[in-house]
Amino acid sequence: MKALILVDIQNDFLPGGSLAVPEGDAIIPLTNQLQEYFDLVIATQDWHPANHKSFASNHSGKKPYDVIDLHGIQQILWPDHCVQGSSGADFPKSLEMNKAEIILRKGTDPEIDTYGAFYDNGHLKSTGLAGYLREKNVQEIYLTGLAGDICVYYSALDGLAENFTTFFVEDATRPLSMEEYIRTMKIYTAKGGKLIRSSDIRNY
Ligand code: VGL
Ligand code: ZN
Image 1: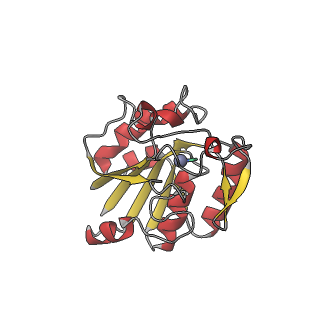
Image 2: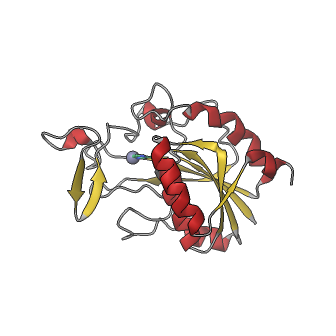
Image 3: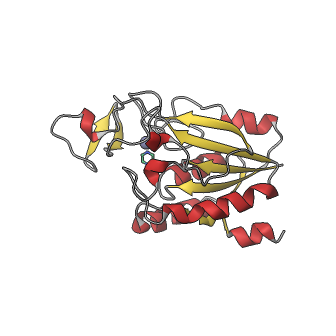
């Protein structure tokens, strides 16, 4: 079985949002078209309480993109984004969400950030996604979404570590930083991660 995982395709990560990914909206039509080729569609939703420690606004004297030590883990401080219940945390209306069987909310603990769909950044707690996928007999996961160098990347690395055959759909993601994206894709492919284009999925 094959699962398509839509990572954090939310208004705050789209142009006009508080943590906008350049051209983030370009992935929406592709992501919609791909869904029919999969047995299972899952979406993740970054879902922070307003007092989340990844927000620069919750640390006096700090500004976005400063780096701090948060309980022993390096934490980049972000602009406030994807606050629970806000319109920025919503999925855009143009995103097909009817096929998504689960919406996995992450980043809810104010003390720790969660980039990937499988674990928090300290690898302290599982989200349960790996077990869910195994129970559904999923062997292959395909990742799309935002941001390619952060949440999609960590989801992909953890997916590999959980022994799923992992595909990163290159044209259905955009990074916050292209430099970081190039660096992280080298790490991902060196670990056995696969890159694929959406046209290759549609032509199977
Ligand atoms: C993300 C930074 C902070 C992402 C989430 O979805 O890539 N990036 N929170
Ligand atoms: Zn976040």
